[in-house]
Length: 249
Image (cartoon, rainbow, N blue to C red; front, top):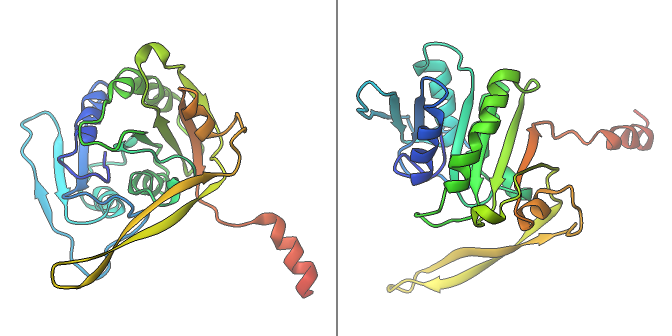
């Protein structure tokens, strides 16, 4: 298991409790928050680890690196064998639509999938430190059990996002596609007490297919937990033939 909110995040603690129902748990997570790190790895700074004492319940290691650093270290240095499953999260904040490419939570899950390990990233739409994880607590086991029993296709991970909604209004899971859209960024320009200029990133998501009932944003808006299968292949296959024809090679 790993995450991008750091070892002290409540979401990680909730996911540990869920995972313990299915077997032995081995956690390798960032020492501090690493949101937005995507698939970043540490190449210049050395990685330092801190082993957290958890009795005989499970292994817990904190790393001063990115979520992907954590996964790489776990697989190559710490785990006694290839794990049956990798879980990432529970992220404080949604990773739906284009946010998946920025997400450290999904970076960790995707990295595990590249090793052929079935992987699931869990997120909720609530960014607060005290986010409500009740829906994940009660429903994550359904997917975990299925993936443990049936696996996933090679190098495929699942991006699962939960809405913020009362249990009575929760409509269950919906298997979806990633919503097409972009973040329209802005920067709040400020000055520190010494006159130094700095910026805070702001912005909003522009949904380019609001009426697509097969998309994850539509599912979340309609009180479903959205499941999107993810596979890394940035090739745009249709353009291969266009370029071959246009460039004559």
